[in-house]
Image (cartoon, rainbow, N blue to C red):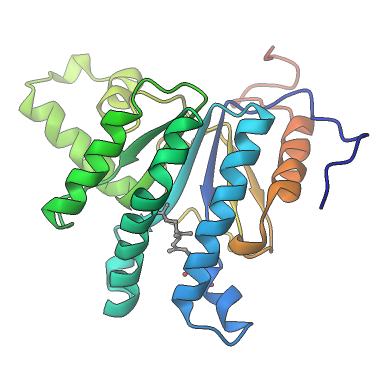
Length: 245
Ligand code: FPP
């Protein structure tokens, strides 16, 4: 769709959008294609969505690319998803860097072969000073595993019971350097959290759409932002009690 002259951005743009990119498999099946073709179409859409995030002034985008549960998929699909991660770095890193995108990773890279771990770390290091958009890739990520990891680290650091509060727990999560997501988007209509940012999304707004991820482009992101802009975030308080930008 072309950009209309009358198109207006909503007044309230979320600082941080997180996305569960679901429905690649069903998108492929509907076309008689293998599941990996759906994931590759998902990557193409990710490109469009990253560009749109920059255009709309979103500062943080976090994407759920591979969960701790995804290892249970058929081996060929797991291998394909690992190859996609490598391909994205090999083919897109230069352009992402030139466009001011800072890359971060949450999750555990350990099961990946050392050369690929190195590529991920290089991408993070190369882009660390970029400020246009912080793109966090959740890869081999699970919210519960993240909390377990945080508790283990607190114990290893000798943190005492009295020191533990919500702020400290937040600092021990992989996401310590990012604000909590304002808006979580889930494509393909599933009504589940699926172990994604379970601590951080405590007060996030949700936008759930039946659209499969490869078809969720700029226009529907804009729709999600308009929807978000109409919400009154209460953080558990009464209407009108919160003043926010
Ligand atoms: C869920 O769809 C999607 C995934 C598990 C993978 C998402 C990954 C990408 C879009 C590639 C981006 C990757 C990187 C490294 C940036 P599904 O397979 O569960 O779909 P289904 O529910 O229809 O089967």
